[in-house]
Length: 237
Image 1 (tube, rainbow, N blue to C red):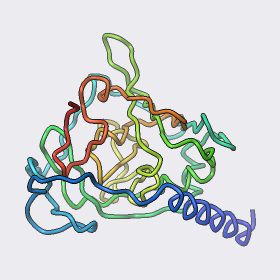
Image 2: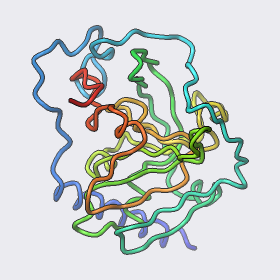
Image 3: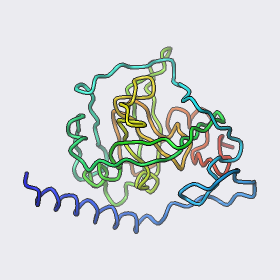
């Protein structure tokens, strides 16, 4: 494909993303009377360390007890459901999308925060624009390669489409200029800097666009559906 054709395709995706963000409205936080956190501000104008969090230097490893080992050449991501153009990408396909490197923080619901990581990958919105969800598709269910060992239930998590289109939601293959390790979800995982980290699936393998919301693995087990760190929004009810 020519460079001009590549640029035209990127421009078309950017126009679709802009139009859909306008239709869905801006991502907003719920009103919260509690203190939001402490320390310097992040790029979104919020305290870098949300309320109830403590800073760690080493990235902890949390999972369901199953760490799949997936080679880059074997990794596949399917985008399906209520969309005009369902498709599948492999690792080399992902690398053909515009690559970005951005710095953001990582907030785990178990009260730790890893600050100032440098992530490299693809804006998730670029893949969403390629699939073109239907006008009434306002939710996503994301499925990972890992599963709960006893039940065999795969890891899932859900997002609103407006959250998924946030420009800081990435599919990342590298952190701090090193390939993402398997224990942290490599070869590719999602990151959701404005939400608790369980919303960003490790070992991501499928994204389904939905017209009705479907809760994910932790959401049905009592974790908050909103998962907003600066509202201390950890559990439902």
